[in-house]
Length: 303
Image (tube, rainbow, N blue to C red; front, side):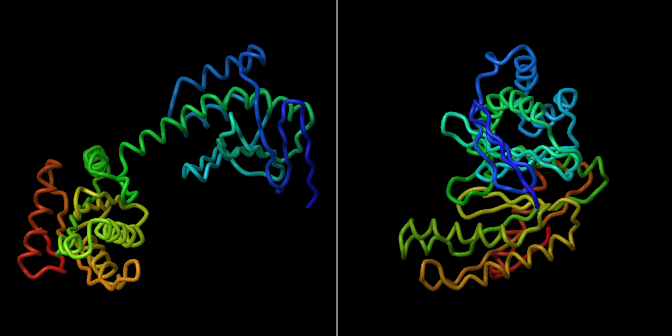
């Protein structure tokens, strides 16, 4: 496949077709004229990264017609697509003050002309500063909503997500279930091997659950050795099956850091009832965990 690379005086490198991306070190928007400054102002109206990329795509079509674009930032775990992919691609590696902001690819059926590439480079100068701010905001949100030990969402995130998922389930007339998961005899790991090993156990538990839940499920560390799963579009029976898969996945952990372990979890399952509050749903699932503990642990109980 034929490809070509051009470099401008501002340090942009553009690659067409499927080659590696070149570096982009754009100038400040205010030095590049009213159009770039206007576009930068539009993009600064939001810190939502996906909305920002969508605004950028919509607002550049009169300057350079495109069929679609794709933004990727693996370090931030972000991929945003707008429109459709096409035969020709102009791809940029976005950099600002030695910081990588990800890559952006423009697609269309016709090749990009030299003038169009220069226009794209100017327009990208309107994107990079708002994009940097959006990425910083996303990082701050994740730090606030994710458990630093296990990397999964935390109790604060659960509090925000639970009402949202309940409202969505009611609008869609769809079932919603909650699983409350508690590690059995967890204290013994801290007592016998120290808190550092206890932390390793919690990470292993979170990893096993993350690998078992479905893409549509939301997993949280509620606190200590207790975890919660919100299973959307899932009734009581489906949630019980999911809980059994989680229980089996945890029981399948045989060693951690070369040390043999005997891990198990007790799980309580509750399906959202009509007009039920978030607190009531959690309390029923939590009570089912207590019943699982009383019945011998390493089991699933339904509320």
